[in-house]
Each structure stands twice: as structure tokens, then as C-alpha cells.
Image (cartoon, one colour):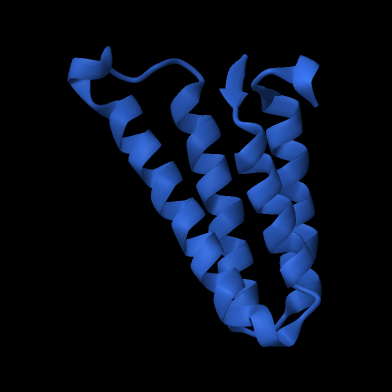
Length: 107
């Protein structure tokens, strides 16, 4: 199972909470663009031959995450905050399913 930091989860949750405030839309867009950039970097590394090539299961996982984040970003840019919030919920569920939080004993 993959690991994810507690801070990363908290960042996604904070972005979700910002969605209810229209004044924080620009911040939400920036947060999601940053998440996409990070996931694209991970995808690039997973596909890079010197990293052992296509790590089984990791590339499709990252592509799915990027897809959800991109849909969320598109919904935000189209002022569909309810769809964006739903997609962020889907993203959190995907993270919960596929990642183990670092240091779970400290939660």
C-alpha cells in the first residue's frame, strides 16, 4: 500500500472546506493546480526508466487521481462548486482506499 502524509490529507480537506466560500475560489484553484502538478511529477517519475520503469499499479492510480483533480478544477472554473465538492469527496475516498497515512498511531 502507498503512504501519504497526514499533512497531504489535511491539505485536501482544507481545500474542500474552502469550496463553500466563493471568496476563496482563487485559492482553491491554486491548491488543485498544485495537487495536479505534484501528481504529474509522481507520474513522470513512475514512468521514468531509471526508476524501474512502469511500476505496476502506480501509473493507473496516478492517472486516476489526476483525472479527478482535473475534473474538479474544470468544475471550479465553470462555477460548479457543488460538483467540485463532490469530486473532492471522491478524491478523498480514493486516497483513503489506496493510501495508508504515515504514522497512523499519531492521529
